[in-house]
Image (cartoon, rainbow, N blue to C red; front, side):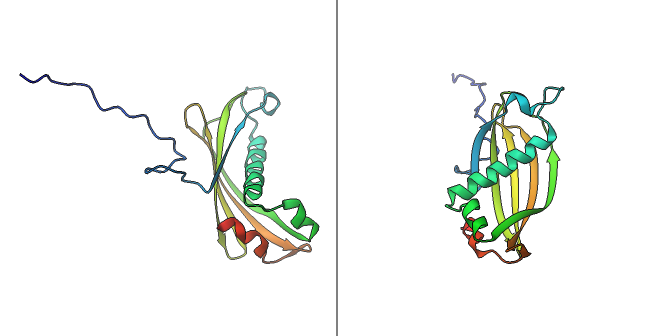
Length: 152
């Protein structure tokens, strides 16, 4: 007589920032931690601090692509935020570690960053952002091919 095996095949869910077949679903990701002074009286990260996390992620991404924000600025080439769309989902709290991820595309003159932040302890999506940046050359709206290396 064969034994009836009622055990289910249990697998650990893959973090949302990973693709089904392995690897990353994002061009770039970095791990950070919430610091106590970033939290409000409710004990959650103040909404404005997410903007810092998103910006810091973009700057780390630039460095990973050997693009120096400061050096390009000295040459009169800048990119600036033109528009942001933010969707707050689940709050981060003091000492939470989180994974900040991004993808970037170019739409005409705009660089469009799609950024997500996940709480590391349970992979919950905390914020989803669409950040549009435009290029400036000597303070005037312009194409910035120096930043096109981000798309490779």
